[in-house]
Picture (cartoon, helix red, strand yellow):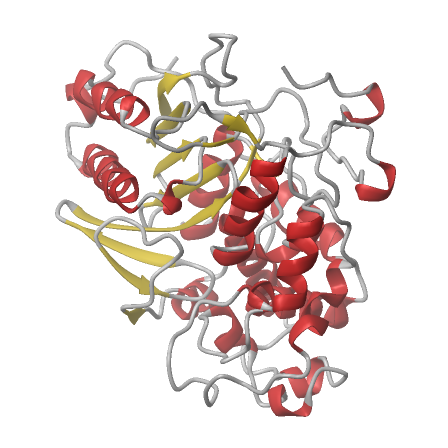
Length: 422
């Protein structure tokens, strides 16, 4: 059982670092397995609107087939110890869950449990940048050369639009050998998040900007730095004022350390035939920052994706640019169905219809969040292991995600339920 967190780290804006650690050190297996996963996969990871009211919970019409699909995922060899899916349709929320929030306790996952959202954080940096485009503080054709001239001259022609759509050609800092060596030696190492691009500053672009698609964690670091340069405000402050407050995200934050706010979904390293190893607080968020460091809850994540993919947060003109999709551009891990890349947003075309959203993975967590274009129907699926290390399990997860998308899009709703006021 992990040692309990001191009161100083119990708040939602934890900023602890390796230099001030008080918790237990990661075990050797974690340092080679989970740390290797974080560097190889995805270090990981308009006008303001009125606050969104919490959706009522409808427990009376849950679909047994969806419950079973989630339970079967948890029970699969090497499966995650816990999973939670939240379906919201016209103001009514259904919660599906399987397994446990913490091995050995029997406590089920809950919508208000904190978790690492991994690369879904890239949608948040998209929300910040596009909100600044609405306010004319940034332009989609702004270049690195104009906004961040201190970065390598070879990168100067890259535009904000290309960064948001992963067509920039920027080399991925998380694949740098120096970065990987640091994380393997000390997964809780505290990085200077605003200097993460230094790890690849000596490298040229991988291809001419705009000529092809290549998912890169460097892109969203540059997006956040552009937002800071344009406003003179820290990225964390921009998140608070442009995203958290308008969408009433009260349990979402961007920490610098490895601690998670309480309560939280424990994340695990899993492998068939081996006991799960808790890696919830194994890795410092400072090495992911705007690319994958955000902590949220299933409830907050549902509100966010409905506001960002829907019409609440951005003006129609900016939304049109956001949803100019590049076929074949996939998030990491790929979401259900056929993927296409927009600006900080992906389109998932399934057998039942289309939703817009983002995915993410990091040691201990794999995430999927999506919404209909009108923002009135949302789905999130969160599991407590990095299933991308197991191709068969990832394929199974994508099938489960598609089942939940189909339930979301059907006219009658999951299990034949109809929305009603509570």
